[in-house]
Image (cartoon, rainbow, N blue to C red; front, side, top):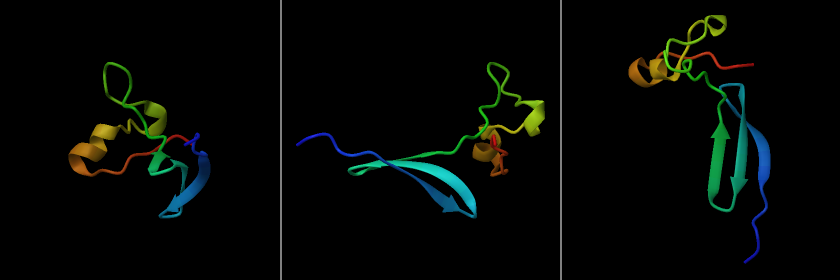
Length: 66
């Protein structure tokens, strides 16, 4: 069995474009979400101090880049 082709496309969820990579039975989505800021975890002011822990801990929507 040779290498499987990599398919790159854009999926839309709630009218938001999400980059999707698929190969055989694996699919990955790249959400481009804020990381919370190295070490402090407080988020960056230019994106309203959003961070993934807000989504995980309280279901609060986060603002991604771009």
